[in-house]
Length: 170
Picture 1: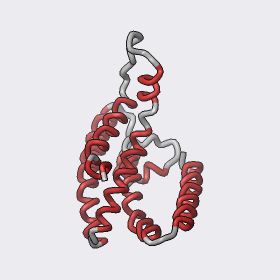
Picture 2: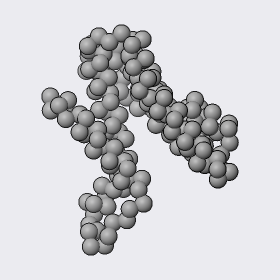
Picture 3: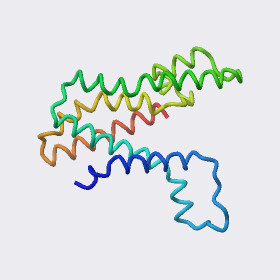
Picture 4: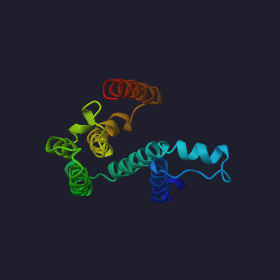
C-alpha cells in the first residue's frame, strides 16, 4: 500500500502543516490567493492526518502480534521523557514571567490540564496521544473481525462519544 510506504513522509508533512498553521507568518499580498490562505488556515487538519496515520501504524503493530505490555512500554518510553522535559522547559520560561504555578506544571505533566476547562494546556496533544494509545488495543479488537454494519455502528458511536467529550471539555 502506498500510504504505508510514504507514511513517515506524510506525517512529516502534517507536522509542517501544523507548524505553519500556528506560525505568525502572514502571506504577502503578492502571493495571496485563496488556496494558499485556505491551506494555512486549515492546518488543524494536519492533526487529524497525523492521528489517522498513527492509527494505521498501531494497527500494523497489533497485526504483528506485539504483546500488550510491550506495546504500552514502547509508547510510554517514546512520549513521557520528552513531554516531561518540554513541560519543565515551558514551566521555566512561563514561570519566569509569573504566569504559571507549580500546580499548573503538575497538570501539564500528568495530562490533567487537558481536562480543566479553560486551562489552555500547552501540550494538550500529549495526554490526547496517551488516551489514544490506551484505547487503541480495545478499539482494534472491537473492529478487527466485525462486519461492515458493526464497524459503521462502532464509528457512529465513537463520533457521538467524541462529540459529548468535546462538548463537556472544550
